[in-house]
Image (tube, rainbow, N blue to C red):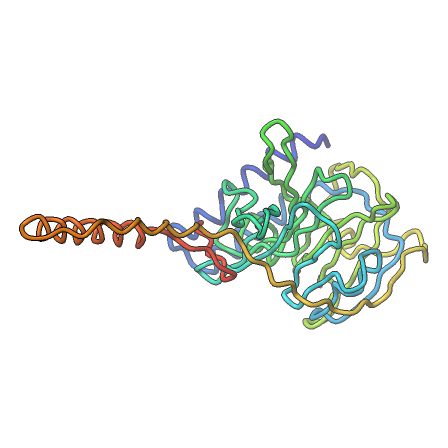
Length: 308
């Protein structure tokens, strides 16, 4: 199967779960939609070469990604690269869900965080953003965009012309499953891709699948083949990936850009008599206007407020 056709199928499916939520349909209907999504997505599968797996606790699985720098993960579940000119973070908004945002360094702070793809914002959470080594793809997991169920893996593509992220796509089957598929990333050496999922383990566990890094080619499969494909069994054993549990780092204190306070006006010269009364009334009117202006300013602090 050609990839463009899969893209059309995914684009059609993307409208279904949100429409169901907007119409107030029941959870049973959402489950039915997820079942239809699974049938559509699993009709076309990529051939993935699994070279190793490791089952680890879900709570700190990211510390087992051995190719990343020691202490680069913060307690907030975000990855903080040692040297970077852009931060990609999963931060809480006003509705308690998480959104993938990005921020640039300024002179004394970081820029106000912006949602990477506003047009793809969902009513769920987006977690574990991971940038590809070439900087052209940003992988993340979401439980609010159209998918098979739970968290699915997605990729956003960098548009060099517009200098923005866009073109969000579901990674497809069997990258995604009926379980929670939480993280996908590539190793800088070009040898492996890693996929983290709880599709074949207990509730409090996940499996890290080490895949041979290759361009996926999707083709049609029979429905009865889907279950076997979803399990991602090791087909080419390779002990080359370093499964080493790293230590947790300290979450850096990040000051995001805030609007500068308006400068205080120079004191007016003292006046007397009737002119003094007029000046006092004018000052009161001016202060009232300033207060109205100040009340409309949204100050972004470390408690990031993201409007979807």
